Image (spheres, rainbow, N blue to C red):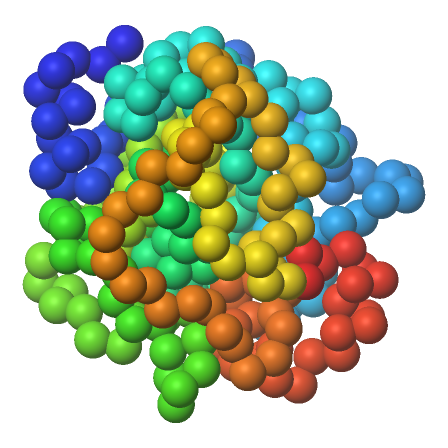
Length: 285
């Protein structure tokens, strides 16, 4: 369990790192589960490849639906204890993904706020980044802007359309999250974050289960957000019969064209992508 000082840090900074939260054995089980999900003999292959290296996977979609190990990690009692301390006792599982960040190729992720992709009635949503490998600046560790969650939702538009990235960020304020395997980063949905390309010879594989308070309800049901709702499940506490609503106006993520991932909309490749092929490949369009 985290301390009151840790909770205050999260509230003020918009993130919290717990080093070596998971044991070496739990990390090893996670890596084994990745290998099993990527086994070529499996019929289901819902993952996205690196455009610069079509043999390298850059993201696995909904890993909690593909292997029990990820479902177990996402509902780990100790993990939920921390989440309860940060967003309250009534916790819904929101979605999950696995970012692979392959050696010498792992894609850049531009500065953004997760909330921009799925605005809700309130901002008690967070993602737990569970690191299966050491994260370093060399292999493209996450960078965050401390306190940026307190400034509200920034525009993520380019030329009047949602492009999932913030154009102007004072990177001098950025903090690099360098951590050993088994560490967890709890990230507020409004905290600005980004990561560089993996320039090392080592992977940086990260499992990202996301959560929300039970009284946070989506206010946008576009194609890249509505697909999360069928997988929502109660992990702790009870469901809410009312929505808690924070004041303010939020730009909706209205893109020029449907997209399959943050990478595509930030890169602009969604403007030329074959949507039929994307759906056939299992993308969350």
